[in-house]
Image 1 (cartoon, rainbow, N blue to C red):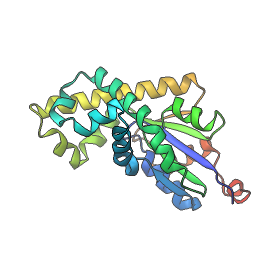
Image 2: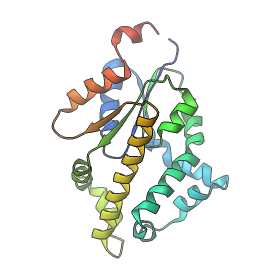
Image 3: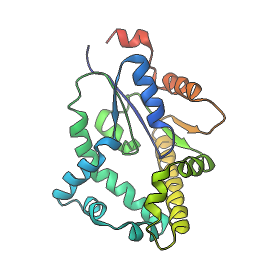
Length: 209
């Protein structure tokens, strides 16, 4: 079977991992979760002198979340652009059909790496959904509690991710890439089916590979 690539990008708390895991399980695909490789890739980028990667590896939480959300967004985008080549090195080790997901899969980076015809969709949560989902993640409070103002740090974090989602959605739309805005009005099963339809994943198509 030759390798086929499906990609889900977007912003945090959009449901990328959940949907990708469900699709991988149903169709027997390899699930490439970018978060699992992110820290390793940041360290490699930092070792090569990449500015944002060095900052990511050394910055203290209080300093990071004190910054203006607009600046945070710019730095986050710059970091993903630095890290992406190293992520591709990990990704290219996979020899089977794969569904990859993660925020590092920015629209412009994906199309430059794989071409405009790659099956690719961006999942972006609506702001209220994003905030609610973050509040359910206990590790988030472990991150912000070290800050001078945990409440302000959390607000900056949420504002940054909204801005990040707006960038991804705008860039994807400009490039003709489908964008799926997630909320809690439809089930995971329904979300998965919509993403399958967008990506064109069917059992029959996979059997032809």
